[in-house]
Length: 470
Ligand code: PHE
Image (cartoon, rainbow, N blue to C red; front, side):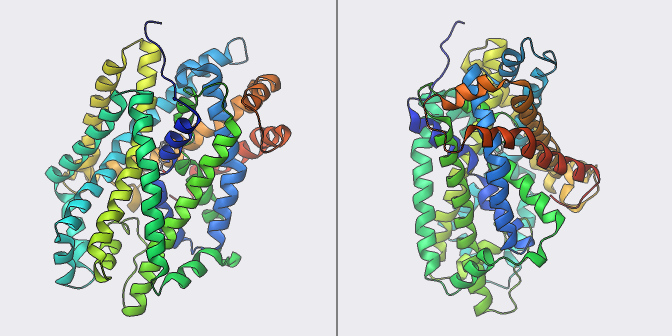
C-alpha cells in the first residue's frame, strides 16, 4: 500500500471521536421528541435496556471487526470472511454500510445546517423579534417559511457539508481526532451548564418526574420497537461507523472499556438533553397554561426557541444551545463522511484528498435534493413512497429508509456474522486484547448470537408489517 493507514494517537482519541459520532442530532433532536411522544418514564427505561442488551453487544462487534481487520467496512468483511461460509456475500454488508452512510450524511447535514441559521438568529437578536411580536405560532411560521426557502436551505446545508469535508480531509489524527478532542469536551461543558440552568427553572421537578417515573400501562409494542430502533441510530450502529473508527484503534487499547464509556456518555447526554428541554417547556406551561407543547419532530426548532426567548437571558442561552447542537452534529457527520472516504481509500487505493473530495462532492450534490425537498420544490417534496406524513419528500423518504430499514438490516447482519461466522477464538482474542472485559465473554457471546439478532429481527418484521413507528 502506498500510504500509511491512519491511527488514533491514543486511547482517548478513539473514545472521543466515537463518542462524538454517537452523540448527535439523535440525542438532542430525536430522543427528546420521541420520549415526549411515548410519555417518558417507561419508555426511557426500555430505551436504556435496549442500549445495554442490544446496542452495547453490537458496538463491541463492530469495533472488534474493524480493529481486527484494520480496513474499511468492505475490506473488513472480505478479509474476515475468507474461507468461511458465504465468503463472497459478506463484503455486501460493508457495501450496504457505505451506501447507508452516504444516504444518512446527505439528509442529516440539512438538519445540521439549520442550527447555523438559529445561532445567527439568536446572536443577532432576531429570535427575540420573532417571538415578542406574538403568540406561539410565530416561530412555527418562520420555520415553515425557512424550510420552503430553497436558497436558504441550500446555503446552510452547503456550509455544514463544507465543514464536514474540511475536517475529514485532514485525516484521522489531524482532522477527526483533533476536532473531536475540542468539540466533545466543549459540548459536555455546555450541556452541564444548561442542565445547571434548568435546575433553577420551576419546571425542573416535573421534567424529572416525567422522565423517571415509569408508567408501564402506557407502554405499547410500538414504543418498545421505537426504543430499540433508536438505540441503533443514536449509537451510530449498523452501517460501519464504529467499525471504521475501530479500524484506527491501537492493539493495546481495551475495546470493552472504550465501548462502555461511549455508550454511557451517549445515554447520559440524551437524558440531560431531555432534562434541559422538558424543564423549560414545563416552566412555560406553568406560566402560560394554554401553551401548546407540540409533540412533533420539529420541537427543537419551533417550540424551543420560543420558550427560550420568553425566559430570562433566553437569547444568549439559545445561542449557546444551538451551538451545542451544531457541534454534536458535526462530530457525527464527520464519522459518516469517514466511512465513505475510508472505503474509497482502502478499496480504490485513492489518496485521502481525492477520496474525500470526490465522495464529499457526490454526497453534497445528492443531498441538495433533500435540502430543496422540504417545501422549496414541489416535485421533490411530493415524493412519498410510504404515504405517511413523516415520510414525505426526498428527505422524509431517505430518513425512513435509513433508520427503519438500512441500519437495522446492517446491524442484524453484523450480529449474525460476528456471532455465527467468526469463531470464538478470534473474537475472544480481540476483545481481551488491551485487557479487561467488563462483562464476561460468554454473556457477550450469548447476547450477540441470540438476543441482538432476535431483537433486531423483530424491528425488521414490524417494519415489514407496517408498524406505525419512526
Ligand atoms: N449517532 C448519531 C446521532 O445520534 C447519528 C449517526 C448514525 C451517526 C449512524 C453515524 C452513523 O445523531
